[in-house]
Image (spheres, rainbow, N blue to C red):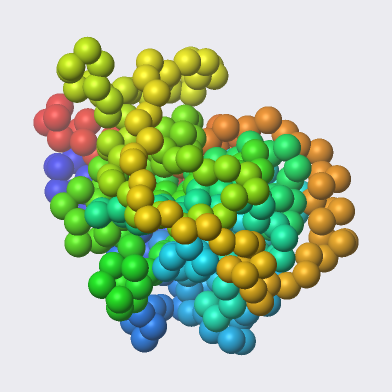
Length: 359
C-alpha cells in the first residue's frame, strides 16, 4: 500500500470514528491561548469548539450578562480589573477536589456586573493587590468552602494552557481594563486555588514577556514562587510594585539559574533550591473589607455545610492536568468514546508514519 493510499485510509477511519463518537472540531485541538476575542460582541457562546476530544465538552458558556448572574451560573468568562474587581475559578458544585475538575471550573467574582457567580460576603479575609509594569496580581485568603471548594483541598492551578492546550477550565477566557483602560483579552494568566488561599496573575497582553511573567509550568510549587507577595490574612491593601523575576528564574552566587520542576512520578516536592524574591512595593493603600467588597451576597448555610462536610481526597495538579483524571460533565455521554477515538487516531497515524518510513 502506498503512503498516499495509507493516509487516505487513515483519514477515512478517523472521520468514521469521530462520527460514531459524535466528535467535532479539530485534531489536535486549537490551543486556547491562540483564540483571541473582543469584548463584548466578539465572544462566542462557547470558546471551546473541539467538542468530544478526550476531555469531553466545555461545561459552561462565555456569553455572560445579567441573565446569567446568579449563584448557579456556569459563566467561564473571567475578569481582573483591579483590587476590588477580580474573578477566581471555583467548582461548579461542591463535592470534588480542584485537581479533579480543573477543566470545569467557573468564575466567581468580587463585584457584580459580569454575569458570573459572586464570591459571598466575608469569604475574602485578606487581599494584596500589586500593579507592576508588566502584570497585575492579587493574592489573598479565602474561606474556600463558600465557593464550593472542599475544606482541606490544597487545590491546583488554572491557566489557558493545560496538557491538551484546551485550558483549565476548558474554554475559560479572561478580560481586563487595567492595561490601557479598555477591555482587552488577557492571553497569559494563572490562578492558584487551595488551602484557603489564592493567587491570580494577569500579564499585559502587549508586554514582550507576558508568557514568562505568567509562566504556567511551575504548577506544583504554588503562589510563593509564581506570585511572590507579602499578603497577610486580615489585611486589605493595594500597592504599586516592580516586576518580580520570571517564575523559575533566580540568581545564586551571581549566576542566573533556572529551576526545573521535577515530574510528579518522582513524588512530592520537598524542597526548592531558592526562595523567590518578593518585589519591592510602594504607594500602598489600606482598606477595609466591607468598604471594598460591597454588593456581595450573604453565604448560603446549606452550601457551606455541604462543601465543608465533603471528604477530601489527596490530589495534586501537574502541568494543568490531574493525576487522578479529569471529571466529566454529567451531561457528557461521549467522553469514553472520545478517549478511545483519540487513542485510535494516534495509533492509526503511528501506523501510517511507520509505513512511510519503511517504504
